[in-house]
Amino acid sequence: MLNLNIGDILIRLLFILISIFFIFSACSSKPQKQIIISTNQWIGYAPLFYAFEKGELNKLNIKIITSVSLAEAADLYNIGKANMVTTTQHEYNVLKNTTHDIKAVILMDRSNGGDMILSNKSLDELKKSKKIDAYLEVDSINQEILLDFLKKNAISEDKINFINKDQRQIQDVKNDKTQDILIVTYSPYNIALEKKSFKEVASTKNINSIIVIDALCATNEIIKSDKKRLIQLKKIIDNAIKTIENDPEASYKVISKYLSGLSYKDYIDSLSLIKWINKPSKELLEYIQKYGYNKDDIIQ
Image (tube, rainbow, N blue to C red; front, side, top):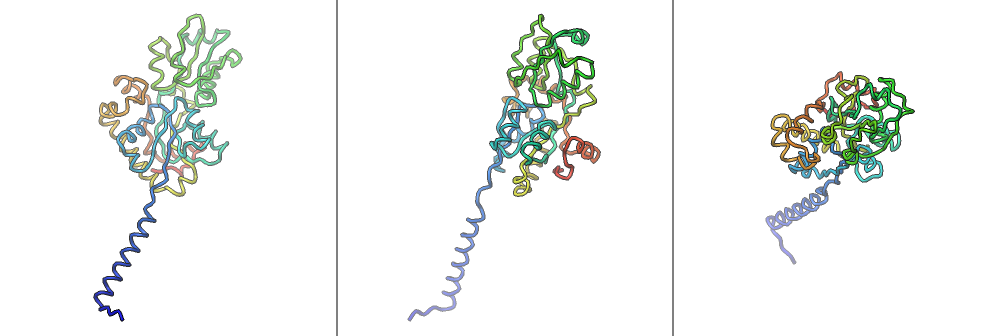
C-alpha cells in the first residue's frame, strides 16, 4: 500500500498545475500571423521604410514589399500577396469597388507639390500642340491629375497619346525636343527627369481641385483580428515620422536605398513636398469622407 503524506500530495499537485500552465502557455503563444504591406517608393512612405530597416516592424511580424508603381502595389494586394497596402484615394476606391475588402486605417501624408506634371514645352506651346505624348501610370491617381490639368487648361484629350509606364520606366524618357511631352510623376522620380530639363507645369501645390491623400489600408480580417497590432503599428509610424522630422540626416542614412539614388539634398527637398497627416484634425477626417474614407476606421 502506497503511503503519501500531505507534503508529497501537495508537491505532486503543484507539479501537475505547473505542467498544465506550461501546456496552456505553449498553446496560447503561437506566433502572430505575418502581415505583409505592399507599398511603392513614394517619399510619403519613408516612415515604413525607416521602421522596417530599424527592426521595429519585425517585432510585430510585419514585412514590406516595394513596387515601382502605385498600380503594381495595389495589384499585389488585390491578388492576395499582401494584406495591407499603401494607396492614394484613387487606388483605395478602385480596390474597394473590386475586392470590397479594404479599409483605410492609418493616414500617412498629403501631397503638397509631391505629385507633379512635367513637360519639355511651355503651357502655351502645349495648348497649341497637335499631338502630345503623355507618360503616366494609367488607372492611378496620375490619370486623375492629368485629366484635371487638361480640363483646366482647355487642352483636348483627343490630342493626347496616353503611354502607360511605371515610374522607373518613366525616369528613362528622353527629352526629345521634336516631340511635345507631358509626364505625370511624383517624388522622388521627378529628380532624374528635371535633370534632363523637363520643367514643372503643374503640381499638387497649385492644383486646388485635387487633394492627394496617402493612407495605409488593410483587409477586414486584419482589422478584426489584429486591431491591437495595428495600434502598435500606428505608434511605430508616429515615432518614425518624428525621427524623420527631427533628424532627417539619420533617417536618410537608414532608408536611402529605397529612394532611387536620391541625394540628401534631394531627400530634404522631397520631404518639403508633403505634409504629414498621421495625426489628423477633426476637419480633415470630415473632409476625407468625400473621397470614400470612413473617419471611424482611422486609428488616431
